[in-house]
Image (cartoon, rainbow, N blue to C red; front, top):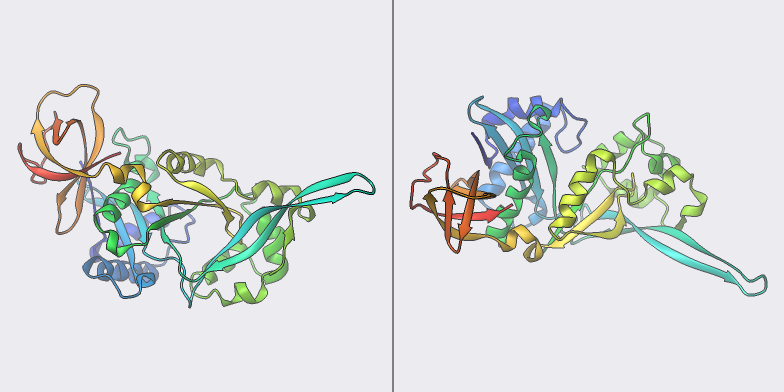
Length: 333
C-alpha cells in the first residue's frame, strides 16, 4: 500500500538516498541542502508566506510495507520575482525577403526575456526506478497529487501553472544549446551555471546576449534541441498535453528545454475534484481516483473504483479511515 503526504523532517535519509539515483538539480545529493528544502516545505504547508516566492512544497510517496519514501514531487508557489526573475528565451521567427533578387528566408530566432511576477512552477518529480510500471501508476499519482492540493488551496498559488521539461542531451551528456551559446558568454560548465542560477540570477542578465539570436548561426545540434524533449521526458510531455498544458514558445535559456503552461482552473484533473461517499462493492472497468484521507495533513491514497454522481464504489478494502460510507474529497486521474 502506498500513500502521498507532505514531507517530514525524518524523511531526510530517504530523500538523500533518492538524490543518488539521479543527477537532479531540485534534489541534489547534499544533506544540508535537502534539509533546508524540507524546512521550507514544513513552513509553507503550515502557513503561506506574504511573498509566494518563498513557498516550496514537497510531497513524498511512501511505501507503507517497506516503511520508506520512494518518490517525491514539488511545487514552487511563485517562480520569478524582483530579486530572482524567471528567465526564458522567446522562440520566434523573422522573415527576410529581397525583391531585387526574389529571394527570401524565414529565420528562427531566440531572445532573452524575464518575468518578475512569475507563475507557480511544478517540478522535482522523482520515483525510485524499481517502482516503475507499478499497476497503481505511481509516477502519475505523484504528479497529480500536486494538482489536487493546488485545486483545494488556490489562494496559495498563482493562476498560471508552469512546467519546464528536460531537453535532449548529446552522447556525452552535454547540452548542445549550452555549448553553442551559454559556454561562450558565461564561460562555465552547464551544471555549474544551473546550480548557480538557483541562488543568483544576476549573472544571466549581465552576461547573456540580450539581442536577437539567429538559430541559423547555431550548429544543427543546437537548433534541433530548441523546444524539444529527451526520450525519457517524452511521456511527461504527453501527459501534460493530455490534461491541458500547452507549449509557450519559450525555452530554458541554458539548455533549450520547452516551457509548458496551463491555467490552474483549466487543468483537467482539477475540474474533477469533488466530494464523494466511499462505498464497498463490485466494480466494472474501474478507473483511478486520488482520495484525500486526512484533510489536516493532506494524506492521499489512490483507489480503483466506479464513480456514479457522488458515490465512489471500490471493491478493495482500505485503511486510512475510508470506511464504508465515509465522505471524502476525490479527484480522477
